[in-house]
Image 1 (cartoon, rainbow, N blue to C red):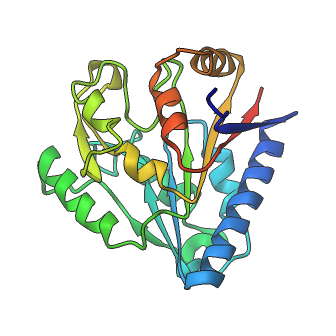
Image 2 (image 1 turned 135 degrees about the vertical axis):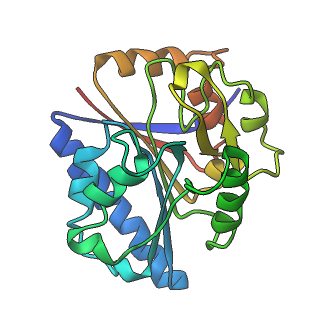
Length: 233
């Protein structure tokens, strides 16, 4: 019988979720800094994490000892409204968190594959495994850029892949992507899944049913520590 590899935390409001998740992430980063002098945090983009990132930016922490990066990124310049890096710079890297070091995945002067290789080198230079990874999930069950129609999906989800950051081509994504692979995410010392709304709760419920194979389920199954699910309506 398979042991359940997740725990769920439900909140009455999205701000209450943001407060709890930010406090938890802050505690994890403080512990990492105490133990090894550096904390590493990978966050996700999209519309869901904005309030959480705002809240996290005000947490008191030795942010100058924290490296922030992205779980995945759209292959667009930071001038684009769809840039995850732009979201992180505008919502997280300010207030108390202004002193954190940011490690982007996108490189404007490189091709998609070249950017993946360069980002892999940059991520490897961090003190892996990641201390904290905060994931999101789409209504199609994708996490990071593990889209169900991605040409590279099986390689991205392969626990044995040696790739750190990989290029992603998926029609449903809207544009090409860069993503951390499952082994990098799964090795994080603390992993949170942040979702909001009834539709995503329904998608997650389907993903957690016996025999389900949606990408988010495969990420949860691969995680080396239980995934903490934070949900609010």
